[in-house]
Length: 171
Image 1: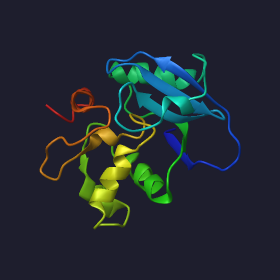
Image 2: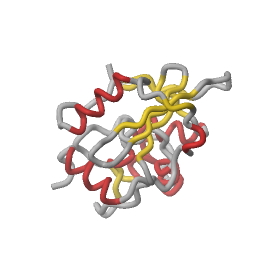
Image 3: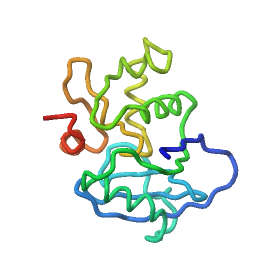
Image 4: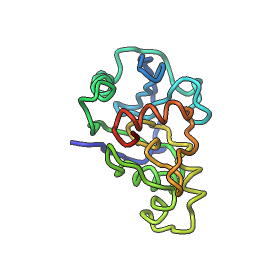
């Protein structure tokens, strides 16, 4: 069980996507060779570009859609899915570390930098965090500022606050 994260290969791929309604707005789930390659919330500042989503097919990734429903209903704390990560080796290291931040908790950019063995790279970790292509499943919303304040979130601060409240990490 749990997430199975793997770096993207250079082999040719076919992508398809589904659009799913959620309490934080429409989500695009992008499937690549049977794995989740992107989960993007409408209007996110960074992240996957809609032109890269492939053809629309609302039948893709039904198990991920069901898990998202359960997550938003407060019944799921850990996702179980195959995920392919498109990014630099540094970004993939950050995203793998992000996936280890438990539900209902938060961490800081500095803590994440130390976790990946780059204690002086908090800003670079923040940049990688902001480019996370698989939001929610790789929980970039759980990372906050060293002072305990909510800091940037590509999906917007209201969404970040909603997710942290849903998980009980923010009262």
